Amino acid sequence: MSTTTAARPRQTTMAGVMVMLAAVFVVLAAFDRVARLRSLETRESLEQVIKDVPGGFSPSVESVIQVSHVVAIIAALCAVAAVALGWQVLQGSRRARVVLSALAVPIFVTGLVAGGFMSSLVAVATVMLWLSPSREWFAGKPIPEPVKPGQARRDADVNALTGGAPEGTTAPVQPSGWPVAPTAASAPAKRPDPLTVAMVLTIVAAGFVFVSSLVTIVVLVTQPDLMLDELRRTNPELESQGVSDRLLIVASYVSGGLTLAASGLAVVLAVLLAKRKAWAARLLLICAAACALFCIIAAIASPIALIPAAAAIATVNCLRRPEVRAWLEAR
Image (cartoon, rainbow, N blue to C red; front, top):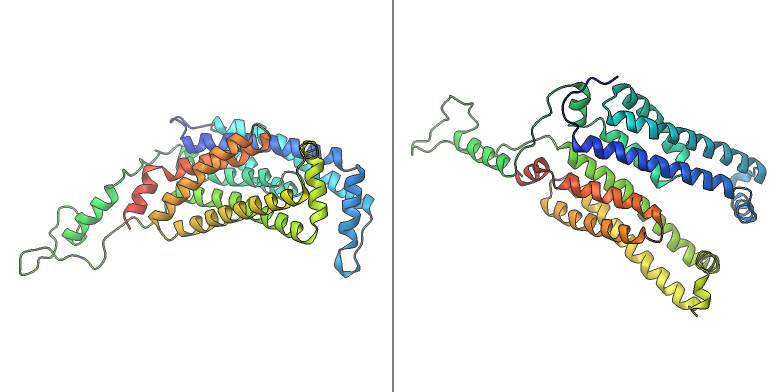
């Protein structure tokens, strides 16, 4: 049921599109997972994992494959429903938003087996649908006007001179004739919703990349032969190009270290945004823009890179909102 009449906010459009694109990737990842479950490579890796499980619990490989198959199918079915619901959300359907919110939990959980990062984006985009101005748009209420940059600071200066007195009243006056300034200038206390969205997107996306890079480096240190075999399997042309094992290891260390440092920095900057650090917002804006550019270029070889690119572009859009800049300037 749709009762909205105002123009759809950009945040709502971005969230709905993110839900549909991420859900499509979850479906593709789930079917890819199902297709590779019965392969010899998957069986060997599962046997190794089961062998290393502590506590004496050792399920059979076949039972693990069956459970993974069921979980992947559930993830695919929920993601297909999320694509349809995402389209209905863009039409202003409140019921679709509620159902999508209920499906976001199983998509996130099952996506850990099939979908990973994409299932996390579905959950983040769904949360965005409950924040302002999407919240007001679905409720049919007037959408609040964004605060213009510098307006909050001017209001704080006025309040400082008038002592925070309401309009039409007189502020306390010192003997010298100047108004008594308050001990602290008034400033917007509530964090803008777009800033919260940028923080959540950054922590989820950069946190996922940080953990993945850390795991890759740990595997590279403990089992370099396994990493080399995987690199040569996914890139058969390396052997014909004469790339040595030493060069591959050095390149993996460098790329993994840079990715680890960049993603860790992004997480730290997102946390500092909660402390109202304007310089952290500027640095995060630069990092997100660079990440979006890099991922768009990488998407030529791997279309899955479009997902982090979408998250980075959404972060840039949120950080450039007037109310975000006004909230940071008013500190």
